[in-house]
Length: 121
Image 1 (cartoon, rainbow, N blue to C red):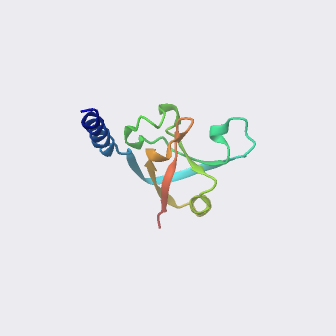
Image 2: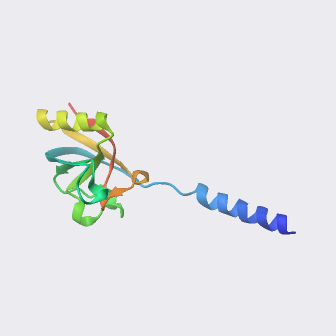
Image 3: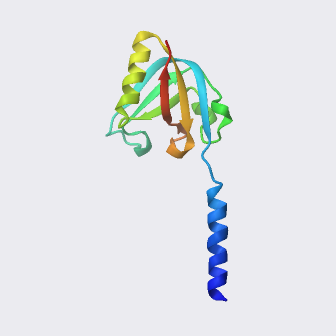
């Protein structure tokens, strides 16, 4: 009987977690107004080694993970050198970008993290 109960609990747990999905959002035609690069030695750990893209205020699909006070910026982890390079290129060339957010990547102190960045022609 105990084994049947344990199997039931395992089945319920798997069923409940399999429906959990990340929230995603894409903002299109975004103009990058500025870029802030944060040092690995910055005193707040959640901001260390990040690149912030500053832009006009966006809703980011009203994702609760993106704090209302941070809707003017997104973060890129410095380890994502290809995304960082694309952001700098778009900024230097005056190109608009599409910014895709996936909450599975977490946030940087309420700032949503870029999952991918598309540079527009």
